[in-house]
Length: 143
Image 1 (cartoon, rainbow, N blue to C red):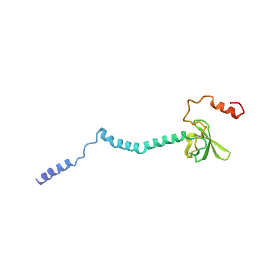
Image 2 (cartoon, helix red, strand yellow):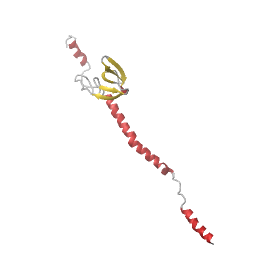
Image 3 (cartoon, rainbow, N blue to C red):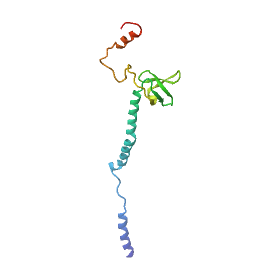
Image 4 (tube, rainbow, N blue to C red):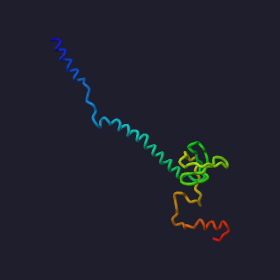
């Protein structure tokens, strides 16, 4: 009889320690979703903000700015060739052409020249032939 009593006591103990059921559908993916949200706010959004700031910096580069390329060259912007290319002077009479996207940082900005038109603003009220009429005075022609 003693054996039966022990068996009766052990049986409920095993039943109580049984593992719970497996997580269902959305509960199984909840940790992955949580990790993705954390990565988004800690990595992706700050990187997008840095990219936007870098793009704004590149669009504001103009002649006379001292810049550093991604390759480590330090030079002064001599000429903006087109939307994607710049001419840098890295030493006296040594000029190189670089892609605008390869500018890593602007070390010093220059003030815009008062007579020089900015890339961002165009005066719609200015006459189309105004620069040509100004040049006539330089070459001895009548205004």
